[in-house]
Length: 124
Image 1 (cartoon, rainbow, N blue to C red):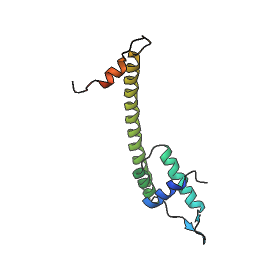
Image 2: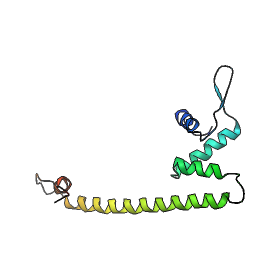
Image 3: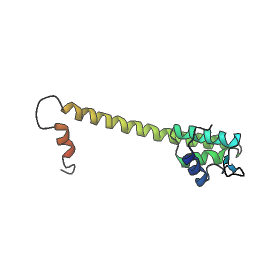
């Protein structure tokens, strides 16, 4: 119902991110609507790349008063900066890869220019 697999739920419980589910007499976990909603919240945060530390900070801010929105906004802005840095790094990787692939062709040669570059000692 939460979209989170049982191993992940156990991990979240162990970290204290979510409360442990109550148990039935037979030992099965019983999930309340509130716990399911909390698991869905954590899942959505993970889907957009928030770290576990960020999620813990956001959850700690929930219901803490007037400053909760400002703190959550701060966490969100910090995460957006990280995402933008990753995008920039991925663009650099893409350009490098395109350049390497551009060296290769169907020239019938036994030598591979891309492999030659990758095997080259970067300290030289």
